[in-house]
Length: 440
Ligand code: SF4
Image 1 (cartoon, rainbow, N blue to C red):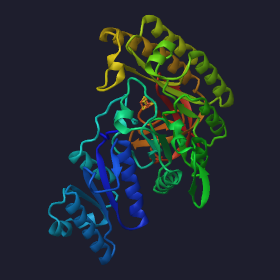
Image 2 (cartoon, rainbow, N blue to C red):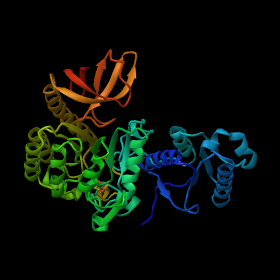
Image 3 (cartoon, rainbow, N blue to C red):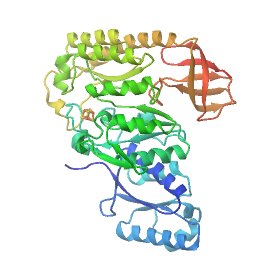
Image 4 (cartoon, rainbow, N blue to C red):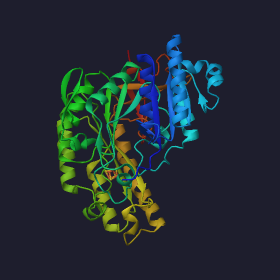
């Protein structure tokens, strides 16, 4: 299968602190849609993360830069030796860009300049458009597999990235631990299909910290919960197995938040999309999830105006929304993606009808969202702080994923720090956001 993702080679030298920087850069590259490759030949660009601690480390770093230039030619340099730009340029004038240690954001900007990141497309991107810049220090995306075994007709991921390949569980847990050690307070677990994690490798037993660990999502979540940070699950395909995750949420091991992209509710449209599920079954499962974990936040995304969608199909979707009363909902109007099977389908929906359905959908969901947020007034909720300025602080409660959900505004509160998790009494709400005050 042809791989169209841009590819980056990575050489990491030096101490464990530098390794944490490397992990952080690699995580961000993967979440932006780059593929990290183990050889110079297949890379569109090579990053060398250098060490400059002692003379031998400087020498090793300079040699690594020279080798990357000889083997590939397109090289950017970061890390401790990057602080001595003149020394690097004297020996290797062809290096494209140089940055110092802990310059994650600069490294990503340099990579984007020479190897543009894959275009944002809501049908294929895992992270929100606003979130493709480097995540702040207190949260990070943790990608657990690449590719996808499904063949949803509107999506080209399988032809771009191939079938699903789960990462070894030990490697994921190593990365998670390093992220937590570097100050991350919230891990956002992502993959094209998070719930399928481990199925391609027959849930084989891996190792972490010398202990056997099975490669499946429930075990992964249990292990991640031991790191003592918020763990949020995204892109959980609606398999029956998902039911096993809900008790972990009820026990407080992972956040009571489930992002399950359902895409539609009409059986005819779901079948045409090659998506699973029936409305009745999905509603029953949602009810069961809420019985097991009453505080669960359910998020989903839907596509309106998919080819062949009649007014009746759309009405089924609105009826589903009204019954399911999901907490957070995203909606896209269908648009053809080059190479997707759905482009060939008859009965494409006119643009004005798509827009009209989108507005009716959003109107209903806004009302549901506003009602659900009103129920939070008077409650005391843990809130993770994302921003602090002279006007106050902005954070998120467990029900809010960064960039795609709402926010909690703490007007006048500037004694908190980014990354703090504080208790907040909720005093006000609108359709998407909450307002409250920190309590002692
Ligand atoms: S589950 Fe469907 S929509 Fe998601 S990546 Fe796989 S093929 Fe695409």
